[in-house]
Every structure is written in C-alpha cells, then in structure tokens.
Length: 534
Image (cartoon, rainbow, N blue to C red; front, top):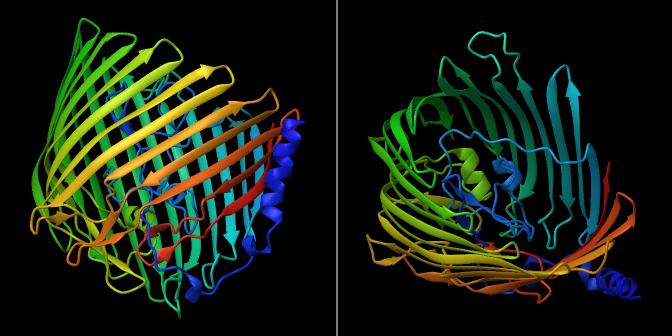
C-alpha cells in the first residue's frame, strides 16, 4: 500500500499543476541569483584525484565521461566544476555495464524528452560497447529550448601472445560524436549556438622484454557556430615506458599535441621521467619530473612540472596520502565548453600554471557499513582561470595569481540493509592575489546529504539535499550569486523482471538557481521514465 501511495503522490506532483508545464517569459524571472554546483573530490587508493558520485560501495573509480557527456545544458543535473583540472590528453573510456543492453526514456515538464540506449557485444575478438543518447526540451522560459545528440563507440581487444611487442597487450579505442543546439537565452533577442565534436582515441597497454608500456593517439575536431564559425582541431600522441625492478618502477615518457583552438595555436610538447618505490607492501613513494613547452596567444610558456606522492596503507581499513605537485594546467576549447557552454567564440585561450600544490587525505573504514574520507589542499597559482561576463549573455576568461584552499570530508553509513546515509562537506576559499578579492565561481561551502531507503525488492527511494554557498561572478565589482538548496526526491519501482519505472523531482523548494550569471535554471522539475535492462 505504501509504495502505491508514493507513486500516486509523485504522479500528482508531475501532472497536478499546469504551471509545471507552462513556459514563462524572460521578464518573469526573479532577479535573485544562485551559483553553479561543484563536484565532490576525494583521493582513492590508486593515487589519483577523482570525481566521485554517491554510492553504497566504498570509494572506487567511476566510469569516465567525455566533456560533452559531462556537460548538461539548462538542467539541474550536476555541472562540471569551473575548477576541475583537465588532462592535456584525455585517456578515458566509458566502462560497459553488467547487462548486455539497456534502453531508457523519460518525459518531464516543459516537454523535456530524454532517451538513452547501450549495447555490449563481441565482434571478431573485440569487446564492443555502444552508447547513444538524445535529449530535447522546449525550455522553461522563452528561447531556452535545446537539443542534444551523443554517440559513443568503445572497443577493447586483447592481442594474441604471438604478436611481436604487442603480444598480450590490451588496446582500447573510442569514437565520440556530440551535437548540441541551444540559445543564449539570458538576453531578449538571443542568438542560436550549435556545437559539434568528433573525436577518436586509441590506447594500448602491454609488456615487452620486462618493460611495461602505454601508447596512444588522439584526434578531435570541434566546431562552434553562433552565428560565425570557429573551431578546434588537433592530433596528439603519447608514450609511457615503465621498467619494473624489484620494489622499484622507473618511468620515462612524453606527449605531443598539435592543435588550433578558436583559430589560435595551442600546441604542447611534454617530456617526463619518474621513479616509484614500494616499501614493505604498505608504503608507496612516487616522484615525477617533466619539462613542457606550450603555446597559446595569451601566455606561451615553458617550465618544469613535478609530482611527489607518498601513500601509506597500514591496514585494510586505513589509507593516508600526501601529494605535492606543480606545473601546467592546459586549457582546450572542448574543456571550456564543458565547463561553461556560454563561453564566447572570441575568447582568448591561455593556460593555468600551478606554482605548488599540497594535497593530503585520510580514508578510514569502520567495518563494512561505515567509511569516512577527509581531505585538505592548498594550491598556489601564478596563472589561474577566472570566468567573467563580457556582456549579458557571453563569458570570457581572465588570468592572474591566486591561492586556493579546500578542506572537506565525505562519508556514508549503512544503518541497516534498508537504509543508507551519505554526507559530503567542502569548505573552500580562493583569493586572487593581484587585487585581494575572491576568485569567481567558487562557493565557500558545498554540502550534500542523501538518504536511500530500500523498501523491498521492488521499490527504493532517495531523498537528497545540496547546498551551495554564495559565489563571486565579478572580481572587479565583487558581485555575488545567491546561495541555494536543491532538494530532490527519486522513486524507483520494478514493474516486471528487468523493467523499471522512475519518478523524480528536483528543486522541490523552488529555489532560484544560477549555474552561470544571468542564466537562471527552472523551478521545480519533475519527470517520469522507464528503464529496460536485458
């Protein structure tokens, strides 16, 4: 009876008010402003900073998504962080799901439609995983309509041992196509923007004569029309060689990336070497030193990059890590679009440069039902990227020195086999040294809590709240975006075997949410969907 009452309640929420489906004029938007969501960050056992999502399991690697997949235009889905560093060459793949195939579709207010499908199969020794999705909405205000299409084709191949050098190696390949059409709806007479992205990545890991190696190539083309045409295109290659010797590992490698971004040269040459030492199976010390040459119209640069990492695992329940690093944080057009889809097509590309960064984290597991991770970091930049408005609709980036401090924790607690709690807290401060003001789009407090309840084999619910504090969107005028709380509820119900129905609602408090200045998100957003796993 309870589960039927819950379903009726959510369906009533979605369908009971005509205002949920009514489009508003731009002049009806409140002037109150709130900031963009920030992702939570923890450090996992393999000595990498990773973006995590709430999960019942202990912290582990999550499937990597492309910039276009991470991007979410005009929705309450999680946005990528304006502070999230990007690798110079993306080396990530989408992990296939456990099931052979899945199909899901949803319909929400403002005529919002979303459909996704995935299929895993074997093709002449290749493990292939395909993922295709499409999304469209009429928009919650005039001119906020948009549409998206994403296609990803991933493959994995284990070579026969008889092949020279590449014998028993594992080669992964990935092809992506992403299309988005949307408007700069912050102004009364918006102009339409269309972006497309084609990319191909091939990555091989193997061993030969006692040496481990990793090699790959990446090529991509990005076009942007609004209404003039600009774009990005490039080709990159990388090679890492590792020589294991007793408890040591010696690394040597480099990468080359030749490209043009927004019709501006943006090339990179990077060479590096390193050593790793394992002591008594519970202490790992790792060092890496490199030299880079990078050009961009704003700040062509060269210099040293370095990384020092110590990891200590005294037992299966404890994990400590200390990381000190510095060097180049490269900026590419595809990354800027993922971080802010309203970046100007005339933006000047330049790179962030970190003088020194100190990161530490501690993870502790209280048995199998409770785990906590605490972390703190200090990063000093000689050049740091700040987003700012060049007019009411478009953004550019500026540089300058800055100090970023972060202190946080994340935890989950399994009360029993039917109740799971999770909590994420992050305090952070970013001070621009040049004028002693806060950097832009950095909330001082980011807090998230969720409560998952498993009512039985067929039904589960999740209630969550996400608080984002005030953020500066202008360094010169010190103007701020208002804080907000995003309260949401999701219900999952098994209709039959592998067929599921999901009903969810976001922003139940009807807060004024701004991911970017002048771009207010819609109020309460509800949707209903189905999912079939095969």
